[in-house]
Image (cartoon, rainbow, N blue to C red):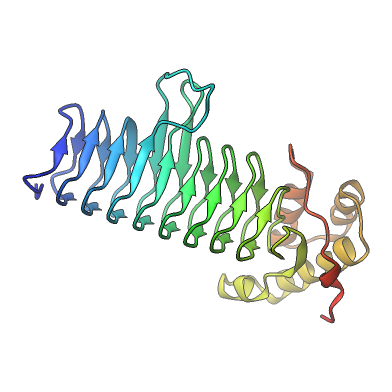
Length: 264
C-alpha cells in the first residue's frame, strides 16, 4: 500500500491496498478509501466518508468535514463519493447535517478547483462543477448537468438532467432538465449542444425544443406547463422533463428570461 510516510491515517479507516496516499494526507475517522484511489498532497478526509474506486482527489481537497450549519447536532452522518470521480484542488464536500443523512457525489463527476458541495447535496452521475461553483445545503443536481464557474445555487434548489447553469449565475429556483440559464438564473433556451453530445435522439431534441417554446415563450405557469407536458410529450426525455416539473419544488421553478425570445 503506497502511503507516504508523512500521511496520517486513523486506525479506524479502511484503505484499499491499491490506493495511493500522498504527502501530508490526513484521514481522520472511519473512512473507506476504495481501490486505485489517488489522494494528492494535503488531502483531508474526515468522518464516515466513503470514496469509491478509481477516484482522484487533488491537493488540498477536504472531504467529509463538519457541515456549515449552526443546527448541526454533532451526530453521525455521512459523505459518499462515487467511483471514478475527480475532485480537483481545494474542493470541499461537507457531510450530512441531520443524524444518519448523507451528502452524495455520484460516479464520474468532475468537481473543479475550489468548488463547494454543501451538506445533504445529491449529485447524480457525470455532473460537472466548474471552478468556484457553490452549492448550498440540500441541492439536487441531475445527471450530466453542468454548473459553470463561480455560479452559486441556493439551498434546496433542484437542477435537472443536462441543464447548463451559466457562468457567475445566481440560482434561487429550480432549473428544469435540458435548459440553459443566464446569470440571473432565468431560463434562456435549450442545451442543444449538451443534448447532442449526450446522444439524445432527434425526436427527443425536437420535443424538448417544442416544450421550451410553449412553456417559456408563452410564459406558462408551472401548473399549466405540467398540464401541457402531460398531454404532449411522448419521448423518454420529454417524460423526464414532465417528471421534474411535476416533482416537489420547495423553491419553485425558474421563469423565462427576457432574452429567451430570440429566434430559434
